[in-house]
Image (cartoon, rainbow, N blue to C red; front, side, top):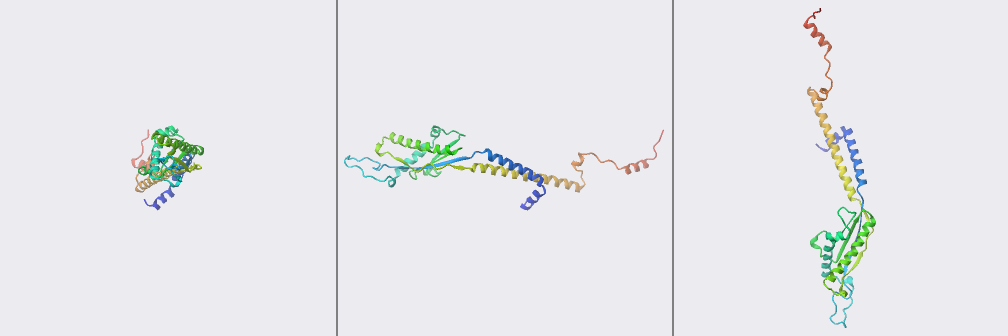
Length: 253
């Protein structure tokens, strides 16, 4: 059926379409109030080399020259960032930070994208925290930053790197002000509205089909099931009198 045919059916069966659609609006409002609003906060860490570089001088009397860490990015920092991202993304790390399935908060540590094959794209760690409250979202981001710094020091200590050459972190973007995320609520409301519209249309077309079949039976002279369920029509009095005269007088005693 085309668009205008659908509009015509809805217009004729408005008394069926509107109540069901009103129920769907009520259900959508209930869903919107029950789905919790989440908040997200994010931060960006940059791995930097020390000012004296990543190696110790062979001659202590001739120390390495000082270098601006913001101008001394090499491929090694990107590899270190990718290792740190992989370590922070494990289930054990999430459990250590208190993340549980169905819990109130969660976090992600990425390189700014979702492609795992391109982790080593730069010395960046993008941290995002999500929680049911603004304070909890910012708190989980801060805890992840502290844990990432400790993990970086632990891994450098494990390979016995000289402490003077330790890679450090710089908060390029500190934990941001949490923002409310209502996308989940709006998607739930949209789904409820869609189901309500489909249910209203289905009910309207079912009613239209029923009344159309009933009308066709009446026009064809067939008995209507609705009429058959009621009382049977009384016989015609004139027809009964005519049948009595045709049969002759009734004998009396």
